[in-house]
Amino acid sequence: MRRARRRCVESLPLRTALLLCVAPLLTLPACCSRAGAPDAPRRAAVALPRVAAAAPAPPAPPALVRSAAIEDRAILHVQPGEGGAAALFEIGAEPRFVRSQSPGSTFLRPTPDGWMAVLHDDGASSVIHRYVGSRRTELTFPPAHRSRGLDVGLRDGAVLSVHREGGRVARLGAQAGAFSAASPHVLRDLTATADGVVWAIVDDALLRRTDDRWEPFAALAGSTWERFVANADEPVLLVTPGRVLRYAGGAWREVPLGPDAARGFGDVAVGPDGTVVFAKQLSLRVVTVSPDGSRTALDLNDHGIPPGDIRDVARDGRGRTWLATTSGLVVLGADGDLLRWYAPGATPERVDLTDSLIVTGRGPAELPPAPPVHGRVRGRVLADGQPVAGARVELCEQPLVELGTGYTSPCDPLGREETTRPTNAITRADGRFELVDVPTADVALWFAVQPPDHRWVNPASPSVDANEVGETPRDVGDVTVRLRPRR
Image 1 (tube, rainbow, N blue to C red):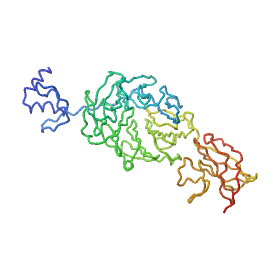
Image 2 (image 1 turned 180 degrees about the vertical axis):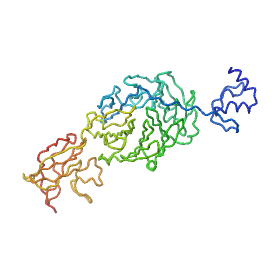
Image 3 (image 1 turned 90 degrees about the vertical axis):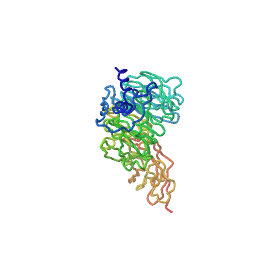
């Protein structure tokens, strides 16, 4: 039948044959290649003469069916630094941090049925651990392949991996093999959407791979795209500085970021419902854009979190936003309220040093409890062996020895780079004091004391290890000062 139809088409005038072949597909199919010549590669859409009958509408993309194997969990990559070994921790059915089976420095990627970790060996990726529920499959790269960490899991269980040099892509797992990109340019990133299309970013265009062939996606050519952002439940973003597109209904559509994006943004995440979260560069400001275009902005400093910047961001199916920051691991609720802050040094797993994270499914139902982020410190101020009443007491990381212009106290944070704000108290008649809201952090805190009608002094001892501060007041004993009359 196919041969008879081809002979029939080839016997028709060229104009009629083109209309019959091109109208349904908007591309030149193989049946219309010149007789006796090899089939021509598929080309971009071409302009067609007006015809009376409308071309049939393209089939709708298949509806996303969430894999029952996806478990509700969060995976954290903790890089302690100072020569310490990196580790992965998971939060699953139980509200606690559990060390993952995949150790080492990794890239984390969501997959349609779970997640995967790309393990490193002397800077060269060597193996992938792919998780479906609690089952782990180990995929090994071909000997000549060195991944850049741009790996994407497909719905058939395979993994596509971009070679370190960026020009070749290897397929691991189901129907393993290798193929080359049609473009000589370096592939910047790779992803796959729910309709089975594999997408790649090159220097100045977006490529899509269908029927084992790369094609330029003309509608988005001429832009320097930066990376993809994917969620295990499907929504995919295409990101370039100041601009984000969401893939939905078989098309890429602009996300209205508003004026915040014009001033630059860093990490971006997308939730299963299509909500986009992006973090401002060099700050703790977070902007959320809902699928309907409504925007909300939040600064973590408003929750009392010390200044810093955001390393990574994720959005789960419960509407929570996960933030790996230089000031600790933060989880926000759907309405922007602070659910958890795992402050520096607050947990033995050191999840405050999380530098990348992903959330699968709806995310864990319950969050591990966070140690208190503030505590109490008490003591007594003595001078010449006698209690000092009415003295001002401050506690901070680096109190000034001498006050400079514009400073009201040694711990005044105005104009200074400081990870902790001062806490203040006034001594009672017996010289005793209690400081509340002392931040728990991986730092040492020092006292500054000003007796009435005297200058500030910085006693050499005692210091306070902020890791040891908690709800139960810590008594540091006597703080002895030397009186310094005002000038």
